[in-house]
Image (cartoon, one colour):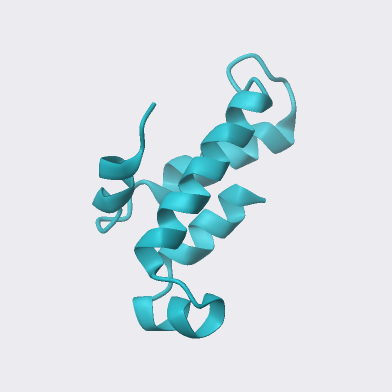
Length: 78
């Protein structure tokens, strides 16, 4: 679910995030990126044969191509 949330927030403007969620877009991006990362790690995505895990990974990777996600990269500790 976090992967879907993360992808959805990438398509929103900051004003939309404020209206719908009451939070800054950058805050939501960091929160959902971290949630997606943790969910993928918990699912052992590198060894998983589950199609849902693969779909979550693809959604997450596609989201990274968005040019305004530098805030996530700066705030994300591996």
